[in-house]
Image 1 (tube, helix red, strand yellow):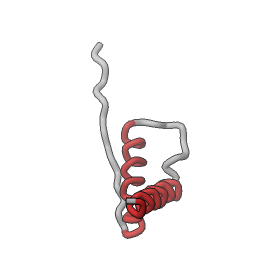
Image 2: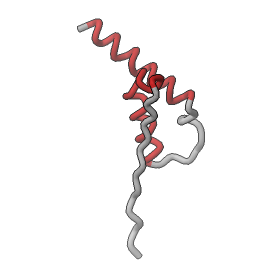
Image 3: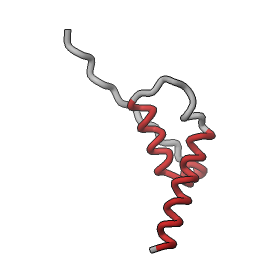
Image 4: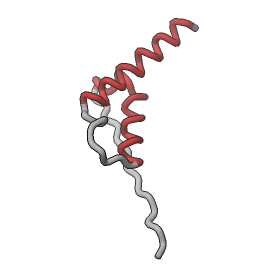
Length: 65
């Protein structure tokens, strides 16, 4: 169990580094697509360095008039 926990933490750290290298943390324009892309990049972890480039697009409904 302990080894699995350590591997999970290392996996997530590598994903966070990949998101940082892609400059996903910079900028003040935060929307659901950006947050989703950051989260998916972190979860993908080392797969990012094997060519995986996860991106999410989402649209929020416009308020009615």
